[in-house]
Amino acid sequence: MIARRRAPGKLPIMTPSAPQGFNDALERWNERFSQPGYLFGLEPNAFLVKQSERLRPRSRVLCVADGEGRNSTWLAAQGHEVTAFDLSPVAVQKARALAAERGLSIDYHVAGTDTWDWAAEQYDAVAAIFIQFAPPAQRPALFAGMWRALKPGGLLLIQGYAPKQLEYGTGGPGRLDHLYTADLLRELLPQAQWLELAEHEAVLAEGSGHRGRSALIDAVARKA
Ligand SMILES: C[S@@+](CC[C@H](N)C(=O)[O-])C[C@H]1O[C@@H](n2cnc3c(N)ncnc32)[C@H](O)[C@@H]1O
Image (cartoon, protein in one colour):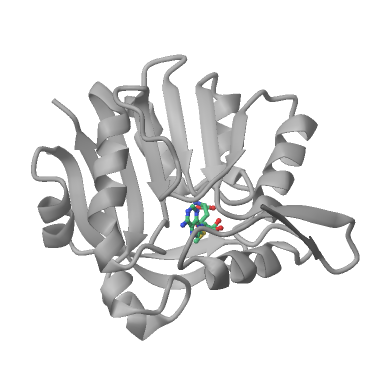
């Protein structure tokens, strides 16, 4: 079923009905992305840039919950073959426009993580950059899906907020049960070979959405 919503000052946007339990999230993210500019900026995530040195040329990469396209467009500009999806059609529309402006071809989709087809062994890398919307009960299925989608030898690149982020309040879901620890990630991905798994602090300047001192966790998991 298709519903129509009007973003302020914009043409009506076709919005797919939200999967069960995500109605609030869909509205909230559409509204945030309907503001002028780019909520998390136009520059790619610095962790992703650094870790992408591990990728072979022309890797197949999936960007999960990619938002307005800052990461997918950067990866495609490096020559990778990129597929990306996000729950918010407003965000995906902006990402598509950004890719067109930059002359890049990216396979974009509007989808939630619970409806995405996590077909096995499709990607050399899966980028999961600040995707902490999943409550604890839904996290195992999400991580199992991302893991399944990796080819043998593929890399899952994760950056998220760690529990201390609640003290900083400079971005993220603001709920302890959505934040990651190294132990939690080890538990979610018991088969992983960890190339990186570290909690640390840094000052982020990613648009207005992630700004200031932040408690982060960086993880790179390799599928054997
Ligand atoms: C903090 S933003 C990060 C966006 C992007 N990864 C980045 O780093 O710029 C979280 C993103 O998750 C998306 N999202 C929220 N719930 C989702 C779901 N169930 N499935 C897919 N995407 C979702 C939001 O629309 C938003 O774009």
